Amino acid sequence: MKHVYALSGVCSTEVSFELREGAVYGLRFAHGCDGNLKAIGLLAEGMEAAELIRRLKGVCCGRKDTSCPDRLARCLEQALALEREPARAQAAPL
Image (cartoon, rainbow, N blue to C red; front, side, top):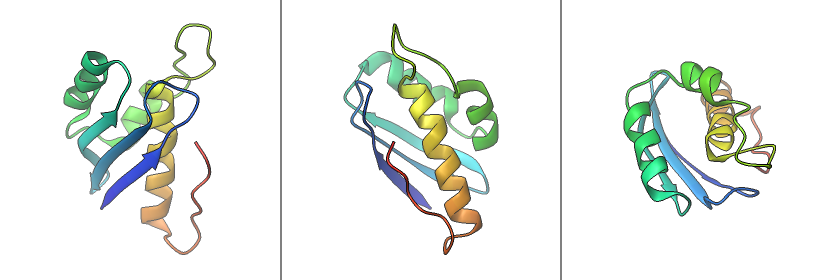
């Protein structure tokens, strides 16, 4: 299933990805640090979403208490919840 999330508080404005059997494919960020975010997409390709969450959640950027990778981890958590229980999951602002 394809997921698209608007981001705030970071340089990137949007992240999109597909989840297939719990793994991440086609990860793309809009705006932000182009090379770094492309690299994250390449490294994440085919990786289990739970592992990405474990590795990226809490990563900070400069003096901010969040980052594009941290926001991705939060989006992945929401996407996994949505796919597990679509009727109960609610999209929270990121």
